[in-house]
Image 1 (cartoon, rainbow, N blue to C red):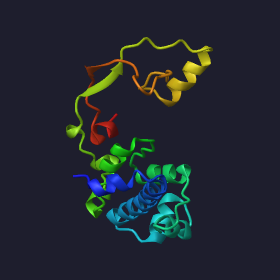
Image 2 (tube, helix red, strand yellow; image 1 turned 180 degrees about the vertical axis):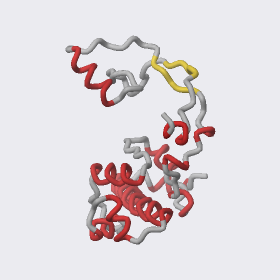
Image 3 (cartoon, rainbow, N blue to C red; image 1 turned 120 degrees about the horizontal axis):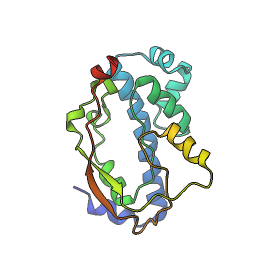
Length: 180
């Protein structure tokens, strides 16, 4: 449940900016600590895993640091085999997503531990036709890096394209992918 006093304080732009910044920097630090703890690694061992100096891991786990790059987060995600989601959101969504700051909220499963059965077997698919790329190689480049997605299309943030729910197959299990 959202605190009405907190929502009222968010009307002050400087408070809102500091609140968001603080939650992002501490959240990243806690997530990195949780990943390392779940693996049962020291900072030095984790640093070896993610191919960074131990001093970098120490800084990243410091809630006061706040100067982490997206590339560093991607390097950690790849090394630990977890996904990374960086996105801009509305403040109501941000408040809901950052409500739970307990250690269990930051403990996530690696790919091999993922619970694929819990993923809904539906996806949102735009009903608008896809714009044709200016050059065929633009579409080829997109498909090479995003084989399961359509090329991006301009969208109106207010209304966006109409969408329908369509069934998609459940992703393969980790074990079945090993046997491929």
